[in-house]
Image (tube, one colour):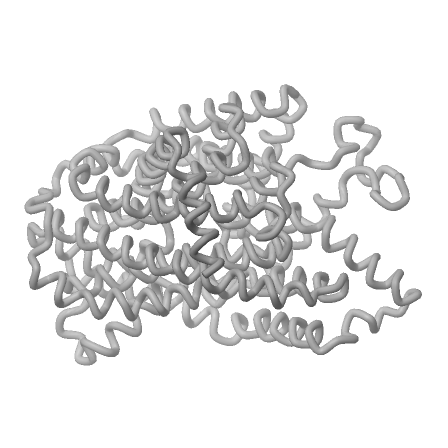
Length: 513
């Protein structure tokens, strides 16, 4: 009963004109960001962080705007997948398999609408899962001491590559780099500057918002400058959208698929590091084995092949918010970016968040429901508008991204030094992406590095320098075991899963052609 009372309070916070308009703006911009190939939810949220801070928004309005962008980008990723056979981001990759063949049959409008409905179902029920599961995790998290928190942060780093990772060594290198960057600044316990090289601006450490915008947004601009790609220009005009609403028979056929995929996707999202990519892949693979064992319909334009990955990846997006809010450990790349926003607003996610900042948590959860309904209402009638977005050439889009990044960061800090740091991170992100090194572990290391170090020092100090205190309780031992399994498992099966994702898309995409 208390949960529903808290949710009612959340709706009272979210249902103001300012927050409703921010949710609408976030959904619209997020859908556009998701539709453009290569951007995706992580980049979309990172690009718009400066906007939220430049507008001088408070904690709850900022989060409402950025989580609406997150959900909108998850919806929008399907548009280029279905119309162009180019996934807007990795979670939308499985949608290409049956979405593009449907578009080739003249059913693009039905595929887009069906994917919008499946996205709504996945995100809607995942939000209910967040409501009921996060407070239960909080009760467990209240048992945590410094040693357990250190083990939890270690778990976050060791499972960050996820089962879909191809190279755990690169993930480990990125995490170590992030932890190294977190050490820059004045040591909180001794007051001694570390790795500042005499630069006064670095005494407070690196601003992780500057790092995020540089790594995600500016690196995208540098990649464009390198390749000058304009492949998507005008391509969408060749596809006819056709009828916008799916027939009732199609909805009946896909309803069980949506329910099963929502459950699988949510469970994948709750696991730290698994993320929406795994949710999408598991949902599609499970559904194919269940209803199309002979491979006669999947990959050839089966509506269930569109509904499964869309419900799965949007449910995973909601599930990834559970560990972020309850434990302070992001479940995906985009939630790592949202974690940075919370920390920059002096709000610490974790067990005390629900008691110390209930207005932020429940206002955010209520806004997720509002954003879901907005996206459902927006995506079907405005499909034509969003398809035209695909015709915007990158040579126009990328300067806008760069302008928003520079103006936004300067508006936040007022420091030209931060602009130089952002450009440096942009170059670093560009180089690392060329070597296929993931960027999210760097962000997580920068975010959690200081907290991880402080908990390690605190735990050892309490036990008079005894390092065995790190494995001194059943809870910490359990966390270490999960962390070790989470690191080793991708080494054994991760490459197979990733190769299957790409192979299935390539194989069935060629069959569709």
